[in-house]
Amino acid sequence: MIRAVVPSSGAMRHPLRLVVIGLGVGLAGLMAVGYSFIFRGVATAPDATLGTVEVPGAGDVVAAASLADGTPVFVVNFDGTLRVLDARAPAGGAAVPVLVAWCDAIDAFETGTIAEGTDLVGTLGFEPDGTAFGLSESAGLTRYGLRREGDELVILASSTAAGGRIDGLPGCPINSERIMHRPEPGEVFDPSVAIESEPPGVIWLEGTLRAIGNQALLCDGIDAAPESCASGAIARGIDPATIAPEGTAGLFIGLVRDGGLVGLAHALVLSESEGS
Image (cartoon, rainbow, N blue to C red):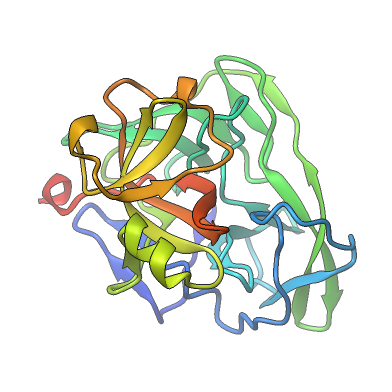
């Protein structure tokens, strides 16, 4: 079993033994030395530096961290191989991706939903090296290029996508320790407020993603009805046809750009009621 580790600063314990870490808090020693332009869609040199983290300790370790601009990643030391994986699961077409969570019980990353009192119902799983497995062959998690400098790993803009294979997808028991990215208090924006204030970097948002007309909108509020979506923000790069009729509510990450949101991803986060 992999030893799942999060730094003591910024980590919190959920009643369901859920281990979480905010996007603003990385591994101990995370230093913002560059910016990732992956969310922005801006070309950058393959050897550009996106951030620096301390080399994980000996043994099999998984830790949640962030690049310098807040992009969520996982730092993995497995079988003596060091990797930094993007926390966003690949999404088909122009659908909104979701953030993966590490399940300690099955030594794998998973996407999916959590129902109260049940196991994590995954739709796609990923090995510690980012390889995808599930009911259909799919692209794996993005692996960032690395350069080791003493006790530090320099994360580079160069990246490759891990492969995939068809295999059984084990469920993650509800009481298993999980590592996922989650906001710290005060880090979450209403979409309309984010557009007005234009905070830098990747931010947390709360709202309901809906298809209204020919646009994808992240409406203010949870489960906002289409007719009540009076405020929110345009979610660029998402095909409205990929959004469920009832919408997708909850926490998201994204970047404010030119009066809209780009790089939107849905976060799998347990509500407090589910942990009671």
